[in-house]
Image (cartoon, rainbow, N blue to C red):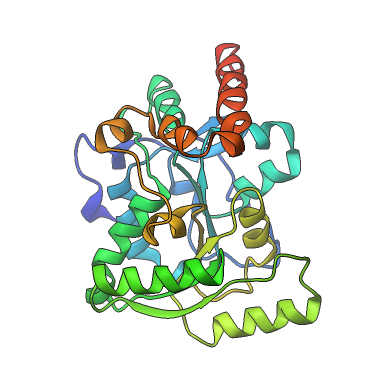
Length: 279
């Protein structure tokens, strides 16, 4: 990390675990040293042992060098899925970093010695980056969700973040995409010269899409799941006190119990059992 943010008694002083700079797509030539990012291995996934400030400083410093790479926004669901699916685990570890979106991940990290590790949620990170984008001149592309949601997202972002440069938006068809269509999509995104490419396909689809396009897409890809829905006001975020106390999952479960019951209650239970036996 740059010396100017390597301050005393901060998350920047956490020593990195000994991990290789693993890349999913071997043809992609990463120019930054991934091993300098502190991580905590949880169920096989190297979760970045950082906070939002650290992530923001890192992206500001190395954004141009990170073009073509991807960021996973990881939670209990994706981490348990990675434990059960080695290929998906490699995808989680194959980007530049896997952020601790889920509160339980950062809690485990702190118990394992990463005292400054904190949640870095997809929606919060998006907001922090949007806030500095006009000043920095960052350009943003949004890939995923529905046309209706993207239209609402465009309108809401224009209202909330004056000067935000929205390079483009695209809602892919809800079917397998042909090779010809994929080439068209890659060209369409790259022609807009984006700095950030936000991917809203949901897990595990969005991580697989980013890994498949590592080194092909211009800009840093970030998989943000329901982030588009939050900023389009399709979904309300949990109150601040629930976010602070790692209860955002409960708020979302109450909003959409049929879809999220298995993911949250069953997966969370499995996660706790695995952590209890030292995984």
